[in-house]
Amino acid sequence: NAGVTQTPKFRVLKTGQSMTLLCAQDMNHEYMYWYRQDPGMGLRLIHYSVGEGTTAKGEVPDGYNVSRLKKQNFLLGLESAAPSQTSVYFCASGGTHNTEAFFGQGTRLTVV
Amino acid sequence: GENVEQHPSTLSVQEGDSAVIKCTYSDSASNYFPWYKQELGKGPQLIIDIRSNVGEKKDQRIAVTLNKTAKHFSLHITETQPEDSAVYFCAALYQKVTFGIGTKLQVIP
Image 1 (cartoon, rainbow over the protein chains, first blue to last red):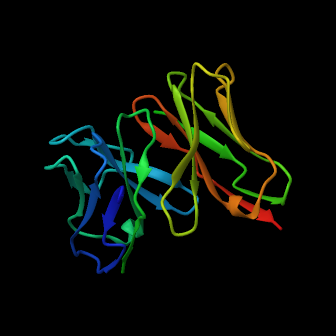
Image 2 (cartoon, each protein chain N blue to C red):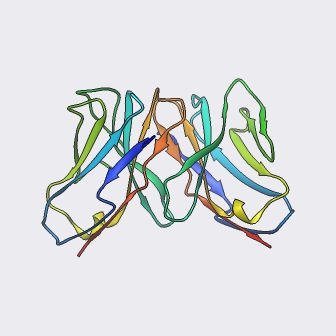
């Protein structure tokens, strides 16, 4: 019973490098979300998806791209990492937009 | 867009006492208000939620109240235990969810 799984759990990047964070859910949920969590700022929505093949911008989308090629996977990409993207990233999924969201364990990303 | 304010940012209580966390929201169209608990090193987990057609909901030691007119909702934890120590987030949702900044609750044994 995996739920929502994020890969990797930790990563250190140099400024300008690129990387992709993978989120996988096994609950057949339509909705998937990427958040970043910074001290004193709570959880802020980066991008989200309401179904396979769809993506939409959230509150803080700049510097990130996403893809939802398969229903169970939601990828978050950083094309050119910046120190301001140092954060803890959480993926979540939900059956609809106004029901419980299930979160992954998080990815701690440091950009130096 | 929606704006959610959460108070206090930190809260310390003695074991057995009650804890109250308050949130206000700005968008009167918001109709779903979940509360999440985040333990250290883990992702947030839903503990209770309330919809706009309900004024109060209770689940054992946890209760949530909603005042739509004043646009505020609160989390009440009674008979607190050390394992209640965590960060609690409120959220409001209409088309997208907006989270509060979180409250770090410390229950002192």
